[in-house]
Length: 284
Image (cartoon, rainbow, N blue to C red; front, top):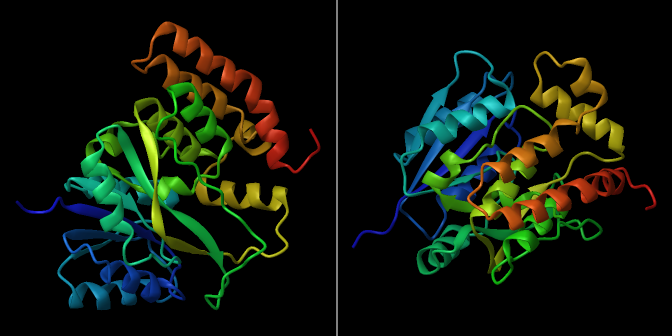
């Protein structure tokens, strides 16, 4: 019986410095039945030439260049729309994946139908590839948790599980990839309504950190620049205002019982202000 196919959505823009290393780590995966959906978004550096070089060397890379710049969310949506594989995961043009990532994730997903997302621990590396030991990206394995606990952990956790492996049908059915701040949180929250998250026991995904001395406000402005082409007044000055309402919508449209829905609404209502203050680094 053939192994399930895995699509890797790799939306790239201005990734020339690190793209070769990212592609090398994907192509060296022990799991071979992969398709790489490589979408270039009108970069001004050498990203496109690197894409063309790698696509010419490996038939598993399906390369396309957007006719116009779609922006980050649009380019992510494009690679997901292209996917017709059994499983799917997003990747970034500046990270390095462990060789066992896909194989370990698929093993979990194939053996446990309650798991909707399998992912590896993420660590920070600097521009030279050296690990940063003073920065942490915690993750949660929610197998065995009830739905309210799963959603609460998704709400409070870091969002690196967004780059895990899931069934393509689930990825395409959730309300994700909207051009608003914290769209990854909304996606993970909705996925938590459907099942559990599983953390693989070996291998670390390496994400590059090059935002030295960036303040909270600087980070929000960077997100806004990436996400919005024409930003509204509300999105500029109240960037997280839409998030609770989007989460409410996920709860209302879910298949959960009325009691569970009420519990989830209370989780959102009481935790949203605390989560916001925590993100700003204020004392609670």
